[in-house]
Amino acid sequence: MSNLSNKELQNKGIRLLKKGQKGIIHAMFSRLGLIILLLVIQGLALFGVFIWFSQFLPHIIGGVALYSIIMVLYILNSRMDPTAKITWLVIMMILPVFGAMLFWFTKSEIGHIATKKRVEQVIEETGNELSQNQDILEKLKQDNPGAASLATYLNRSHCHPIYDQTEVEYFPLGENKWVEMLKQLEQAKDFIFLEYFIVDEGLMWGTVLDVLARKAKEGVEIRMLYDGTCEFSLLPHNYPKKLAELGIHCKVFAPFTPFVSTHYNYRDHRKIMVIDGKVAFTGGVNLADEYINTRELHGHWKDTAIMLKGEAVKSFTLMFLQMWSLDEKTLDFDRFLNVPAPSNPNTSGYVIPYGDCPLDEDRVGEMVYMDILNRATDYVHIMSPYLILDGEMETALKFAAERGVDVKLILPGIPDKNSPYALARTHYASLLDSGVKIYEYTPGFVHAKVFVSDDREGVVGTINLDYRSLYHHFECASWMYDTPVLQTIEKDFQETLANCRVVTYDTIKSQKWYEKLLGIVLKVVAPLM
Image (tube, rainbow, N blue to C red):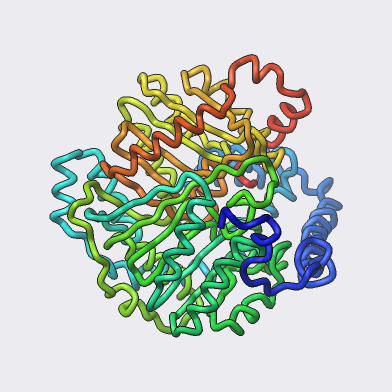
């Protein structure tokens, strides 16, 4: 494809939307406009109730004080993250009545209650679909008891077995993944599953869709799931019907529903592609042109992905089917999980594909990251687009550096949003004090989610170092131990590092005053962002 001109590239693939049929302007005159209007009405209604109630405050000031004390005690004794507790306590202090209303409205999870129950039901019913090979686990215990204990934890949380003899290939850029993905899709014979956070019409999705449409005609079963946020500015609400005309089964996960949605949490942030149960892709790369650098938004887009071949693919198949089945009356997993997946006995190391669900109390993504930091002896090298940390994660990063571990963070040099960038910089001084080394990618935006440690352990997936990924989103990743690909990941980290500027105390001092102020103010509400 590199031999084609830009014009020829842009004309490749299928486009289902006419010019002007997507984006904010179109959406304002379609479903998006209605959604925004209803969300504004929802906010005004809540504020109106507060204003109405505030008329009685002079008469019940004592009651408000007592209620505030009760709320403070309740929050302090809840299982909430300590940083989130501080956020809510500040809100209660500033706006006792409205803050309490907002707290209970959010905690009620209106609009998510049915989803939560169904998620719990599906996970319970499918929790034994994949069994752990005890010989593999025992072998890892002999190699590294600490890594084996992490494997035990992951298998405890929602059926994530450990596998060996699984091939892993690493892609240092989205365009590398795109090329290989097209090759693998062309070889599909039975089924193709896609689950993505962002899908946008253009070259990348157009070429993928072209293959999917042809495969559907050949009888390959194709299922696609994308997050409801796409309906805001990227795809119209009838896009699944357009895909159905091509023979592709499509669902939208959690479309926005004003008046029954408490917040924009619980999004499906996963990126999964499974082909015939034999090949799987995951990582940070969505199905849009900025991810393959054919459209520039924030300079050069640095992203990563991996491809798995072998038994470990079944875990991604299971994760997809669990999400797909949330609105299905019957569960049909066997015919997709029982397909043979050829293993490679010449491939060393271990792989655990895993997911993280925001509707339970297990912060799987954060626990894996902190466990790697706590067991590291030489280095932990990290790439993340965002750095909005709770106290526990910040402590783990600092403690590793204070133990003499070389902790390096690569963050964007050109941010995609000002607010997360300002929040990230509020952590810089504290991390630098402990010896954590921070770098910013000068060519553009880093969207990769990568941990690599001691040449023996690593994670590539969708999980950012921010509250949304660690607490509020459905996520996925692959943990790897002693696999050959870890050397490739570390090499890519070093090559990326060569294109970064180092963050120093002078960097922090040179930050503009209004950016510092923005970070300070937003830090109070960071857990809610």
